[in-house]
Amino acid sequence: MSALILIMGDQLSFDIAALKAGSKETDVVLLAELRDEASYVQHHKKKIAFLFSAMRHFAKALSEAGWKVDYVKLDDKNNTHHFTGEAERALSRHQLSRVITTHPSEYRVLQMLKDWQSRADFPVEIQDDNRFYCSPEEFAVWAEGRKQLRMEFFYRELRRKTGILMQDDKPIGGQWNYDSDNRKPPDSSVPIPAATHFEIDDITAEVCKLVEIEFAHHYGDLEPFFFAVTHAQAEQVLNQFIAERLAHFGTYQDAMRTGEPFMFHSHIGFYLNCGLLSPMQAVDAAHEAYNKGLAPLNSVEGFIRQILGWREFVRGLYWLKMPEYKALNFLQAERDLPEFFWTSQTDMNCLHQCFSETQRHAYAHHIQRLMVIGNFSLLAGLSPEAVSHWYLCVYADAYEWVELPNVSGMVLFADGGILASKPYAAGSAYIDRMSDYCSGCKYSPKEKNGDRACPFGYLYWDFLGRHEDKLRTNPRLGMIYRSWDKMSDEKKQQITTQSRAFLEKITPS
Ligand SMILES: Cc1cc2nc3c(=O)[nH]c(=O)nc-3n(C[C@H](O)[C@H](O)[C@H](O)COP(=O)(O)OP(=O)(O)OC[C@H]3O[C@@H](n4cnc5c(N)ncnc54)[C@H](O)[C@@H]3O)c2cc1C
Ligand code: SF4
Image (cartoon, rainbow, N blue to C red):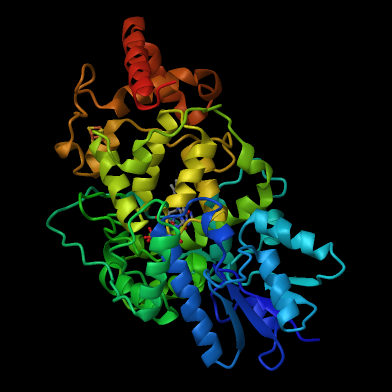
């Protein structure tokens, strides 16, 4: 029986399971630009333009490969702007009576597909997503009975299972992890290669015009637009990363430099998450570079761990813990987002730099997300719901399955330690060491009191004091609480007063 093959905006892979299960001869492929999906949170304009352009290019490529494709544009007159309406219309247009699709990446979309399955008139076949190393079921088996779920042990299992960076069941080089060689501060004598840029073609130009009009009120700059929008271009980004940046990836993984949003990172997350690249392609390319002696083990292992380890781990955790995970708020953080998350207008230079780059590129690298914006959100007690909403809006690689565990678990400790063994809280010394931001700041990391004192300094101690009842027993925080205990009451009071005044200023109650 002929079928409608529904491809969602983050399923743009030629070998996606739904296409493999279908037939070019008899089936119709449906792709639709939906207002509901583009604005259920107000996604960055660049993210919407990127995805619509990638979808249009993918539809064209599928047609050229012989598939019958039905593409619904955002401004098509009868577009209902939701999956259900568009699937129903397409079934009727093509006189089909069943749908094949691939397991969606988000919980809310899976619930929608389950609703369809409960309807007699809407048979839906949901194929497993074949674009990961580990299925949710395999992850659940791994997690079963474990007291703690730690990425490092999961990653080692996947290394053993896949044989990646392994020799005779032992990690190549003798260690699983080379982080001790990594994490050097930025070095201005090491030039940072330019990020890969692409010219806007007619399809992207048309989409950008549409987004500028239809999503004018959304966050972010549409220009400059230089993202890859086809598989070939995304592969070019990967190849250029492997050739020019991978060798330094590990060493400068945590480094931040003013005006250098991409540093030695790969900026392939956008493409991995929507299907223009596969994680296997990226991991294999890095492995091959190591085999050819083009990049050292500390960089190659570090890069592979991000994809084979972290990316797979957060996905497994998402499907294991949803929907409860989304509501967790272990530290009972309730503060609203300060306005400067959206405007970038703050005197704190590190935040200003990271917000400005986010606004311009719909991108910030991991340490900017974790140790600057994330750390601030944790220390300031911002609500997990508000922070999660912001991260989902502003990054072009953001989808709930990967954003939520990173925000709720890694950054805010809102899950109480399911993902991380302790909160990633830090004062100003870390940012001062790993970036050049402090030299251009109104505040000073050296000052502890007064108007020039860096807010990270006092907010850090205030955070530890505020959450003493929940965090003191954490074995990894024992030493820090011993320092806290040594502080005089007067000093503690000063920290509390400074912190209250600062927080009241950024989000008046
Ligand atoms: C608060 C916060 C929110 C985040 N939100 C997202 C998100 O919405 N989408 C997203 O893809 N990543 C997210 N990350 C993870 C990571 O920051 C981005 O994947 C990375 O910055 C993307 O840039 P890149 O492609 O240059 O990555 P690189 O640094 O070059 O790393 C290579 C790849 O490894 C994977 N990766 C690295 N770290 C992680 C991680 N912690 N979790 C999952 N995958 C990882 C990504 O696919 C990335 O493309 C978040 C991290 C934090 C701390
Ligand atoms: S002094 Fe503080 S606020 Fe300013 S850039 Fe450094 S860490 Fe950020």
